[in-house]
Image (cartoon, rainbow, N blue to C red; front, side, top):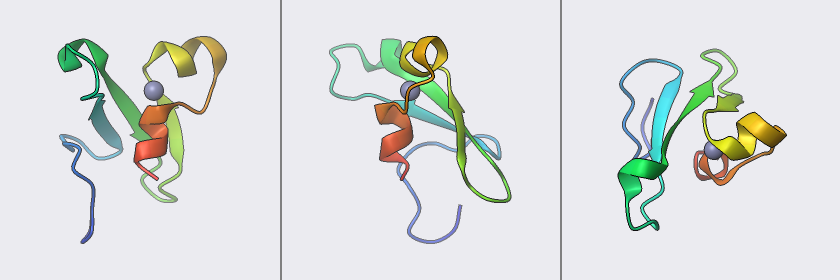
Length: 64
Ligand SMILES: [Zn+2]
């Protein structure tokens, strides 16, 4: 990630962990968003909203 990046941890390229801090137990609402290394398009999220319904979820939204 370049300057002006995000607050999310970035342990490996293309994978960003997003934690929903608004929940009582943020650790139970931690998901991984996949990002295309080249285009930086958001590819997928591990949360039920995206997996079950292929929805554009809040985790992907916060990275925009
Ligand atoms: Zn999500």
